[in-house]
Figure (cartoon, rainbow, N blue to C red):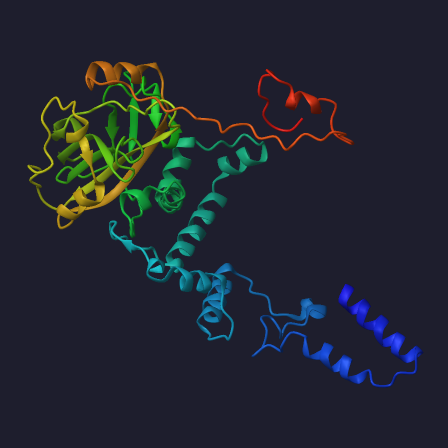
Length: 386
């Protein structure tokens, strides 16, 4: 805008002074304009003044079909995702799905089921009466079961991506959790594990009660690992619990490869993730390489890598579900380091940088009233701006 005003002023001044050779200046300004696009711009064919005359999609399915067709067309511009893929190079490869295969229900069948359910509800006089009197109630267990059957696994996959579980445990891969884990600590299930909730180390001092839906003749492997607790290797893990060859959902009847060890987040390191992973086995697995002594109170022996464990047994195990919680230091961690690990407790503290104040002004005009307190000798250091 400012450049335009300057150009107009100079052209006006040239006319006032009787100068006729101002065409060269105007041509130079025109050459500085942005070049024309190399093809049609997005949505260029849409008449925004006549939106009512446009064809309506009428359904989400038709909209998605049109969007997929538009996505396959070759265009002359690049999207933001394409620019990112060019910058990342090899890192832009798509993630490999290592989860259980899933047969997706056809959309036409889903529509038929919904219509049949709607007709059944319309014929139910008691349901109509409850809706009219606003007394209809839906049990939360029924809602949760429907969520786990439909969109729950995909939402949990998004949650795992957000918390970096796939990135830290299975770099370059992901899976959709098809089997839901129900985990509770304590005799009365006082602390339950969901997906990122807070559980204190004192509550997780003993092994939890784990249940899941499984067939009687199936075999499973349950793993509890912590990708944030390792004291020496930033990419290392500590295995807290490992049970293999679990028949059905009887976790207590499985082979305990590594006995349970309580979480021990070091003081000053914030929240740590502890992840339960459930693997489905195609056949019995030999866990001799992963077996630890019982009891195992050595951090060196408990050093673990989920990716290496999966690569050793990837022919017979498949990730099927997960759950995780976050925990922070409390007084029980001190007892874990001293009594179980027999070592000094590491404590991490934040070292504040020295306080910086700009050189003092002799005449601090416009400064706050406490300006001189910053430069007073022997005064307690202050932080921030006041």
